[in-house]
Image (cartoon, rainbow, N blue to C red; front, top):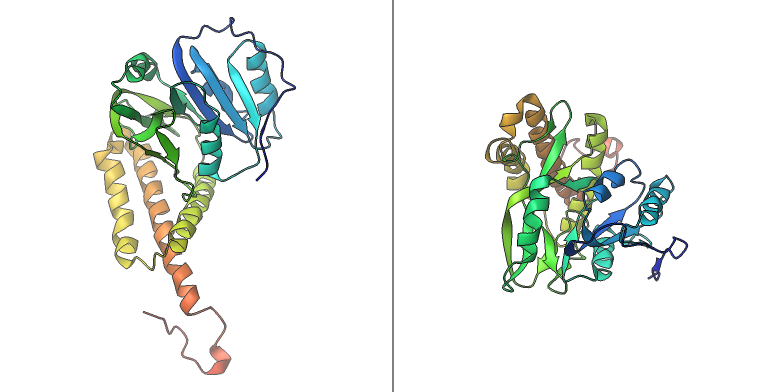
Amino acid sequence: MQSSSCLSTLPKQNTRTVESRFPVSMFIICLNEEDYIGNCIDSLRGCSDIVIVDSGSTDGTLPLIQSYIEKGWPIRLFSEKWRGYAGQKQFALDQCREDWCFNIDADERFDEALRTALPDLLAADESVVGWRIARRPYLIGYGYTPEHVHERRNLRLIRRGRGRYDLAQRVHEGIRPDGRVKASPKGSLLHFRPLPMDQQVLKENKYSSLKADQLVEAGNGPRRFRLVFNPPMFFLRLYFRNGLWRCGFTGFIEAMTGAVYSFMTEAKIYQRNALRTKPSFDDVDRGVRVGQGND
């Protein structure tokens, strides 16, 4: 595996310029995030360590990050060949120096409630090794969802050495903690990537393929019950339990998009398994009954 390197061409940091108040390492992976990463970094003001791992950006991402370093932000920038989502984030986590480490994506930022809550999270009892944080998406035509309307809380803040990423996960990667994890009662990450539906479907198609391949390689066969019931259950959970109904038609579209992702994942698992037992070929001239399935 290619060894990593810190981008030593960047100028020496003047850490006195940016006051360090939060003893936490923020870690970010990025690739061509010029339009987003600036707002992410701005929301991390006062953090003592910011690790950014770039996997080959060709837009203005690197010059933008360099401009923050020149202003004195405590950023350590690394260049690392893509290892997959889990592998890349684990590499970034390994570079962290502080006792607490926080994973944030380039298109996310702290809201003020989370910034206010952060000192209390960092001061948690030793029995707590991590914190799950809510995330509020930006919906086209609406804006950020209200504070009580958010996605599932995910483990983002972990004590250094008390958790690692599951490298078998190709997508929706998460940290496996070694100890007790709690949910932050306040604050959210704001997720700003307002993709129109034609682009969002391409993203869901990519992610569902990664998920389906991961599950098939793990030995999962066709999951017929999930194929039928998971998409509507996914919608109901997002729309009613998570509260997207409060966001009007934009919330309906967001919930339906989640259901589409669920359907594509299960359909791809079914088809990948079906192709193993009955590869596709044009059988009309062979006298084989067209439409004969394997169910």
